[in-house]
Image (cartoon, rainbow, N blue to C red; front, side, top):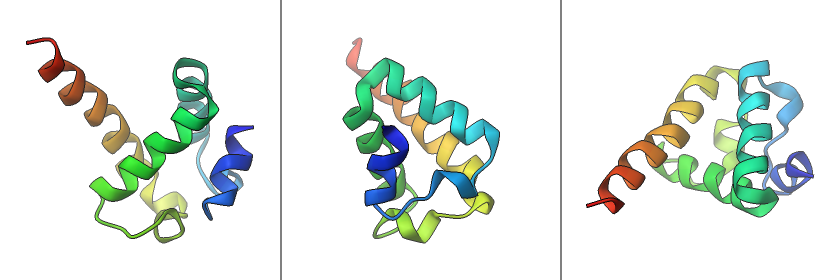
Length: 81
């Protein structure tokens, strides 16, 4: 399901590493299918790209994963105050 939502945003999960696929699975479980897609869109903005098609390559996997988890680390950390 998450792969389908991402595909509609021009992001083909089949091109990506097992690590990124595991992130998609984990985020879909934790945040739901739509939440997972939204996190990828947030990561895309953090990487200063106009849409997911610009980062639809295995080359960007580490940066995408970092952007997603940095969002949680810094976002959640600041919300606790």
